[in-house]
Amino acid sequence: MESRGKGSFMQDMHQHYNYLWVALSYVVAVLGSYTALQFALGIRLARTPRRRWIAVAGAGAAMGGGAIWAMHFIAMLACSIGAQATYDVMLTGISALLAIVVCSLALAMVGDGAFRWSHGLGAGTLMGLGIAGTHYLGMSAMLMSARVSYDIRIVALSVVTAVLASTVALWLAFNLRGRLQVLGSALVLGAAVCGMHYIGMGAATFTERGTLPAGFDQGVGGDHLGRVIFAIVVALLVLALGLSIVRQYRRAVLSI
Amino acid sequence: MAELEVRVISERREGLLVELGRVVSEHDHVLVRQRLAPDTQGASLTLVLRGPDERRAALERALGTHPRVVRLELAPREAAMPPDEVVPVAAELPQAVSAPPKTLGYGAASAADVVQVEHMLPSLAKDYPRIFPWLINLEYAVAAEAREASLHLAGRRAGAWVFRRDFLFGARLALGDALRRIALPALRELVLVELHGHQLHVRGCPLCQPGGLSGGRFFCGFVEGLLADALAGGVPRASEVSCHCHGEPECVFKVGS
Image (cartoon, rainbow over the protein chains, first blue to last red):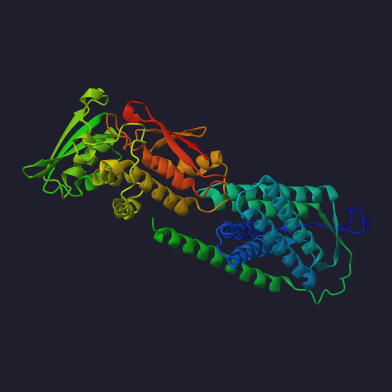
């Protein structure tokens, strides 16, 4: 990470946001969190190791792939800095994998049995670092005619925000009961992901460097990324609705 | 909130209390006392009800047009009746002749009437949370020595069912948290209840009327069933420490693990 000010003889590029896309990024973060928590709350109830792993993987994929990774790239599509950008395929893929693996571990840690503060803090820290790691890895995957530098204090603030809000959201999800249990937690977790992202973007300064980096043409463009994100969002919606319908049905036919 | 005495004549007694009890519940009234007696036209059911005055006219209309009701008489009563004027229904019923001693719901050591409880449970689930007519019906349907154990079993089954239905997802909790986040909202669907530490204070319990028998064993079973799979450690144990049926202002249940 470079500190702000390097190459200051070059012109800084300003970030402009499409607020509709910003709102969409929060909706996707909440939707992903909601689906992930629906899976995660079922981890304790899994009767076989296979089902347990399905619940863990489902939770991790929805949280990491949907709430964090898809949200990050929707938010990047919302941001215009006046320079065309593509994304390094390898780093973009690794950022998605990192998010999924870290979130699976965090939700497995906290989803099994009683909620202990040591587990809650550990899972919240892991998830917060996962959110931040995905974001900064995703940022480093950007290929464009601009150099990115960061204000290290704001970067630290973004990481702390992600860790704290994730811990609170996980506590809410596993300790509350009732209608707001999953939705309320998902709203907080969505705020954790978006809060971290937009604070992190506030830490970034884009400086024009005139030339395109190597591999720019091989990078994934925004239109391709948009299609992948659309598929993820549809999958999240189907999963969230499917889980809700299955649970409502089971609730209705539950014999006394 | 004055009391209302309702006298109903019906051609058959079977299921009458349950059906009319449902109408009473739907109109925000609670059953304070009831008496079912033979009548030349079939059966005479006397109900003492308590509820908001503004719902009284609607209740009167609903009872008056109910297909089981041949004749209906209503009269207001004084809310606070001295205990010696109260005629407990259970005392008039054959099952209650050898009623267990009133030791806050622990008098009966007999086993539950599983057949009767199992027979009643689907109806209880169907009408949940308007379950008190079914429980009152159960009290009459089982032998006196099996009454408390049957209420306890019905409570355990209902509590476990409510837990699996509404509170299954989430981590296991400490007793205090489980009482606050699971037992309290679940009980609030049934009765007026407050939590003081590890004690649940129930007001106006329809199963524990002054001068009658305690129905507290149902609530003990309900809380135990509700929290059986919710606690981080230990097995929940509920006991009734005071009961409205003995003149206390509220029924108090102590919960431990």
